[in-house]
Image (tube, rainbow, N blue to C red; front, side, top):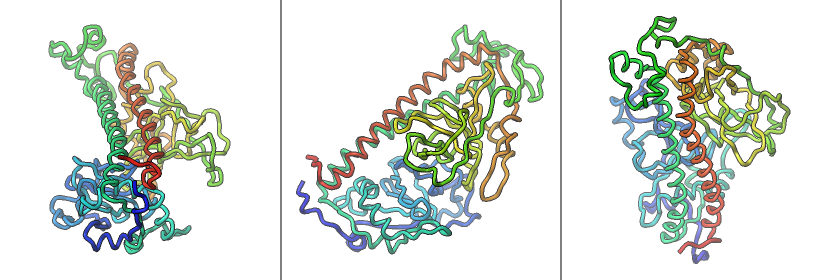
Length: 443
């Protein structure tokens, strides 16, 4: 690569040449939001280079005309300009057109012959872009970090010739495409486990089939024999005969995590599993760990495969409180500890496994129960009685064990895919600065 030909260009110049557009989000009013319509994406929906468009809030259809100029397009690059400044995400092909919240800005290539859209994404994740942000963002103890649109237009960034842009985007994009494929595979694998749980233990499909004189579909004879062929009355209504209703508190121990001080958040081989370790809607985020140097109790330690639940929520739509996650191993740390906002759920009965509980905690019944036990306005807090007081239907132990044996291979594959994605991400992060600086050339 002829690195000497790579020159820094002011962003405003790229805008005036019609190569680049820089836009901000939409200042929505509450009346414009509803459960269906155009996805309204907030800063918390931008993580790991991706953008979650499966959100709770939407611009209602009757207000769609107001936001046409703010609709996203494939390969738009969004970054948070207020709050957690600099977190970047790419709008992928196939995602629905969305509208960003005001704290999110997005950059768009208007001329792919001069600015490769995926190269733009990698440029916004670079140290050069971060240096521009850090030089201008306002911050203080009383206000959130902020970077204005005017400041963004004054950024000076390096734009290589289009041939080099295409080559860089191809190399890094291949790695990200595989990471995205793994993410989609994991989403499908978890959905399979949840669907099986819903069918067996919520909808009681095999029992209903036997009640109607049919063989339960997709079950071998040995598994089908474990399901009864009739129902009985219970405190929760009709349940399969021979099954029982139990309080979760009789089946598990719930341990609250460790409070911490800001000075304890320093480089260490120990890390806290925090509120940021939860995906909106449930699931685990590897980038939510915080290195930690403080002391902790032995029972506040967590390991790969442990079940944790969010005890606090700062999202406007209560997307995190009461949500479960399965902790994953992380090669960067030797020890993981739950933080104060996190509860550790450990089975103390053979009636339930961690995977049974994880799928149970994702059901509508459990989520409605925990939400009803949450208090607060700006910050939601889960009552200590929320999890223990939940009542659920428990099958016979042999059937619960069969479910665990069916679910375990799915979650093992999820873990393997996650490990592979972390390796690929590390390779990408190593290559990115070398490619963007021209230290490594791509033919």
